[in-house]
Length: 175
Image (tube, rainbow, N blue to C red; front, side):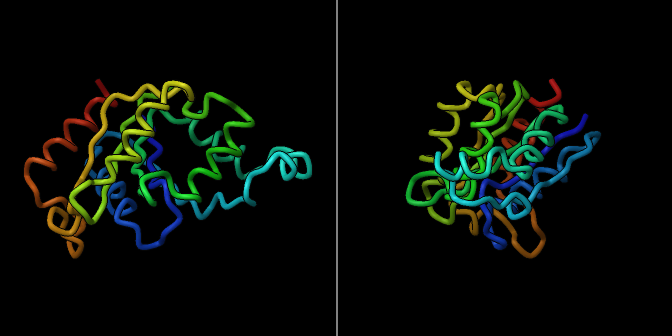
């Protein structure tokens, strides 16, 4: 099984990158490629830019990665209750090329925040809109108070209940 995993942010120090990397390690028996959105940086989307540039190769490459996978794990960072600008921009470019961005793949959505909300707003928005873009969301999980529940030095969840919930969510991709 080939899984594409990524944090929906361009921050190099993102807790969501740490979470998705940890999730990737927990997927024994699968080949997991962890993408970095910085490898898909595009100009700010607008219809004018689209008319000028057409369909950017980086957006096509992103869609190709998703299409070639057997499943997706995405960890959403939350900026002011919504998607990061980097993810939203890549998503906007991609959806103009192919509305079914998620390509009907089984998907697990994650989110983490340093506060008690666990990025629940963006996770809720992503989950509610996913079917419009052909995601088969099998599970979603929010990790609140990240630094209280994740050992940054050892790169692992320390909260036993959250770790079990993550394991269970990831198993839905192979069920």
